[in-house]
Amino acid sequence: GKPKIAAINGHCLGGGAEFALACHYRIATDSPGTQIGFPEVMLGLLPGAGGTQRLPELVGVQNAMPMIMTGASKKAKAAKSMKLVDHICPPGGLKECAIEITKGLISGTTKMPKRGEFDGVYKYVEMGIKEYGFVRDYVFSEAKKQVMKMTGGNYPAPLRIIDVLKKSVASKSLGKPKGFAEEADGFADLALTPESAGLRNVFFGQTALKKNPLEGAKKVERVGVLGAGLMGAGIAEISIGKGLTTVLKDITPEALSVGERNIAASFAKKVKKKKMAAFDRDMVVSKLIGVSNKDKSWPVHMNKCDVVIEAVFEDLGLKHKIVAEMESVCNPNCIIATNTSSLPVGEIAKNAQRPENIVGMHYFSPVPQMQLVEIIPHAGTDPVVTATAVQLALKQGKMPVICKDVPGFYVNRCLGPYIDESMTLAFEVDNYMQLDKAMKSFGMPVGPMVLADEVGIEVAMHLHENLRPDLGVRVGSANVAAIEAIKAAGLKGKRFGSGFLSYPSGKKPSGIAGMFAAKETTKQNPAAVEAMRPFFKPAKYDDSEISLRISARFVNEAIFCLQVRYPRVLLMYLLQQQY
Image (cartoon, rainbow, N blue to C red; front, side, top):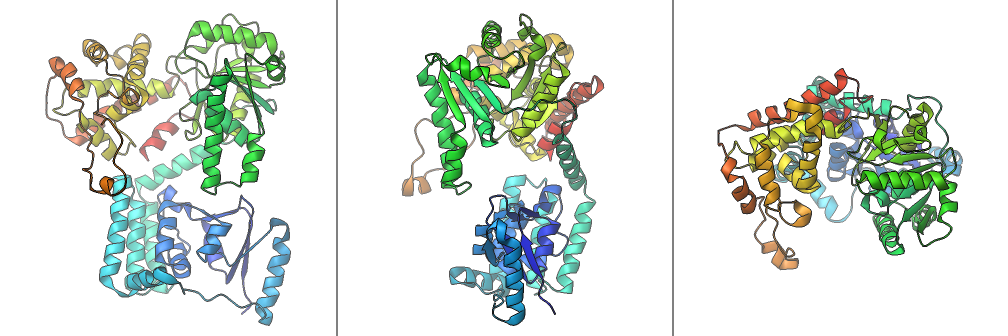
């Protein structure tokens, strides 16, 4: 019959990619936006339109398995190198290229690539997987170990994908009716799992959050960021990355240069990993304007900004000073956003000349990686300002959640009872690292003790303390005297080298010495144990009891938020962490 050609420009994912696999020939453009992938696993599913059968036939089991199991997509060049794509052309010539290749295939002047033929070591490993049971068993058992290590067994989809692939390869039914039937059964079974239902809810919730529910948002073309520390530099990085001209300001040129170097280093890594071209990197970085107090022109630059985001220390007096200074140099319509994590936005706006232009935009660290941004209007914030803040967060590629101006806003408000229950249980078990083990098995990326060390013990305790007057008994379980003893012992967290965990001094050996060095294990810090000893009340709890107690406190507070309508989309963050 006539050859079927898939001409690909832009995202070709899921069913679209499976449709392309069913064609005889695939052409893709070299546009940065062209990507081919199978993200069904992120919805708790497997590719159900032939993806598990045709992809390994085309590119080999070794290349197909990571793509299907992780949902990772490939750009055109990488796709061609693994034989997923047959030809690459510029975006403007896609139609003409497709027509010419079609004519060539019909006339015979263009030869159809040979399918299923590979070179070098890859060829022999592929042959071993398909022909020898012991090789196949080893490859798929290693894949299963990696899945269990990464997911703790909480995701059934990757395991079912391994099962479908292995059965199809073993029975030599890849791309045959039996293989397609195996795939269909797997898809149907996974579609009925609660994990898939949860992941699909997360997906639809995230999709809903990509649209601004508020009307009247003003266009933002130029952003100012005050403070070139990790938070400020991160906000500036994501802003220029999305095409926004950004003015980054700090007090001294030295402090400014640290932030500029961090931004430059981040984009340099992307170039090194071939995630962006050097030319594109230079175009993006050119949108960054660095100024300090020593530059007499800095007020002129700030005056041109549509939104100024302050990312300075959590000090109310300092933030009042910043607001007053920005109101004196910025245009009257400029929105001043505060990146506060704990101070009331209404208090920050209290002495402002134009309080209606002030709104909270709470980013999470590290900014380039963390999706969530809390948008916090105070009682006097203009609705247009709130809508513009949401639109800016969307432009930056973030997931904005509108919250009320209450202690903890939304995420930290839910985190307070989580910390409270963790600090109660930490004194009721023989080894408080059991809490981390239980919560990781439950599905959390890290446990509460590691989390406290990562964010800083003082920060976690300060959050807990700030929430006590507002939440009362909901954060009243932990022993305050025990918390004070921990602080008095000088335990501050990982960054300071002393927290709930022990952190080895010195660097890990490299090379051959590193290969034979003893594997580091996660241990309790003896100093922490000693400080906590007077308050221990050991009891026996299994992991399921621990995870239920801690997660229930988190969920309970999220329900309280729902009850009083704190954030717009409420359980999204919780669902995202769980699934």
